[in-house]
Length: 260
Length: 367
Image (cartoon, rainbow over all chains, first blue to last red; front, side, top):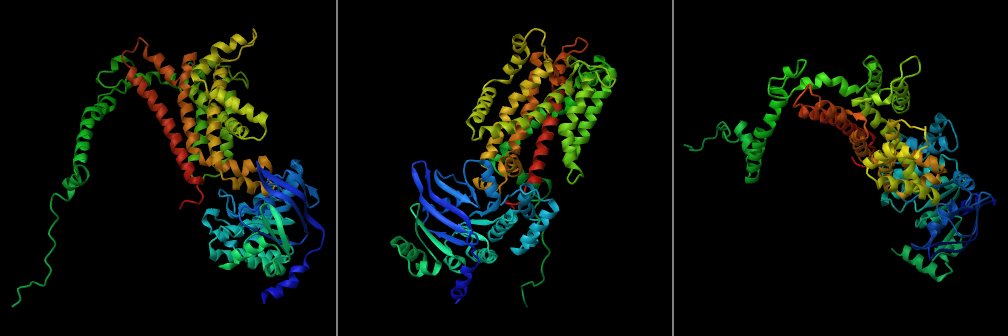
């Protein structure tokens, strides 16, 4: 039922202008070829879920987009700027691309409010009072304004991940990257984080999400990408991807994660 | 006709061996053969060492008087310390100019004490005044020669004042240089990394005594005729270079302990290298290595005594110079005990401050 409702909504927000272009991207860790000939175009407003077995290169792929990992061959163009070793370009892109990590990576020596306001104050040069107002608005959006004065170590995993999402949003990014945002969480906390992500998707944010939450993929994704051995094996819109996988490896992977 | 008495009889008092002094001793001093032996050893030490030491230092000691003749009690002759106190504190600084040193001492105390007090207002500004303002003010006050006050050559500095100058400058300069060296050693740029590794390994590889000898004896040989650095300045540079190399390694340990995720999160927010170091990484890394940093500070404080080999009269050297004074005999113990006590006060203060700082900066994780 929800899938049917989600279907038209999945297609609406995309407006077609390119947000991310990856052309013939290769990456090696020493001898190990992690990314092989990746070609991926993401339009503005598109929501993409990347899945695949562990070690398939999916995290590396999205970490290349904000240059946490360096690619060795090919081109990556984010928001019209090409990623090269030029630090100016890298920082320009990082300002526009938010990222959430598997282990949240909040700054433990700062309060929640300081975590949120830090980058706007120091990178965007927003006045402190204004940055803290914005931070409080985002904390309300992720439904934990009462935790503003606490330190990350005093929050649950789910709350920390919601703070991490809010922290990225405070920079007003054009693109959000999620690197397995729910896989370090206890089961009862996964939903609260996914709810925040679904709400974010409804605002028309461009999202790339590495996750194994297939329900989430069906609800919000425009496209699901399956990776294995450093290659994009298959990509399709979610219903077709889950109901009618083309490739054997995709079928095997889906049977494994959907079996239990 | 019941033979059972239903009313409760009153509690008997506990046996005399379980309560009071005897009970306490049974439980705490003689509860096992090992404890019995340790108690005997402890009692032996108290009778043979602590009581005589106390007797020497307080009971039979003489505190008032003018010279050796006042020391008749058979214990410590603290008259000697009182008599030479000005020399121990100020060295050869001219009597008429003591007020300048006193102002510096008062400023130091006034700026330092608030740092120990929780919730003191403007603590951060006072901290900056301590680290930046005080050295500048002290420089003009102690050297003189400007603002209408007399110039005092650094050769005349000595005692506690010189020890404090050496260690304060050493601490204030070694920490930032150490931070820069530690960051440099982890840099991606091979030239910067190479320079930092070279610097650190060079200074860590030589004893401080040889650094001071180099600075005072050999350096002037290499410098052109007429160019003569002040001896105190040369010693200071030597101490700062030497200690900053150690500091760098302590801080590098802290930097390595910060999870990779913190660096990545800072990068992903677009903070750039200096902001991510200054706002995210260093505050956490420095907090982690507070014990190591303070350890280095304490070592530095005590190492300043080595300047006596190049002829600077720090507290220990001024004590040594005084005990060979013919006007006093047999006062070596008093002199060294006094010097040790001065060092202990400062080092213990630093250690307590670091513990308070660690508690204050602690935010969460452990509960």
